[in-house]
Image 1 (cartoon, helix red, strand yellow):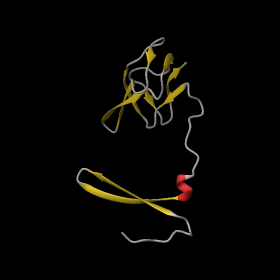
Image 2 (tube, helix red, strand yellow):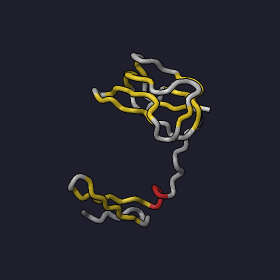
Image 3 (cartoon, rainbow, N blue to C red):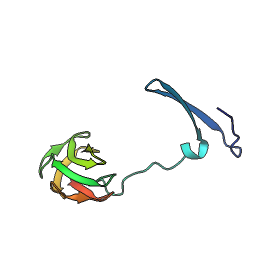
Length: 111
């Protein structure tokens, strides 16, 4: 891979191996120092992609742990399970089976 200078910023090479292929990429000091993304409201769980709600796996009052499935969403002919990003209690389920949702639509509210 060619070494391309980057306006006096220190470069860090990152190498990784996936499915039999070696990859190499670079990160800059600016990228490493960026402010991490933090959700603005940790009580709302939203979808990252538009799709159709196939199944709702939780109900109000249910205790959930990080990684538990909450909703199954079909997008691009694939079923995607939206997981709980943190521990909590389901306050309200905003969607229902058969509903189409846009990107960033709120699916579940937690307490």
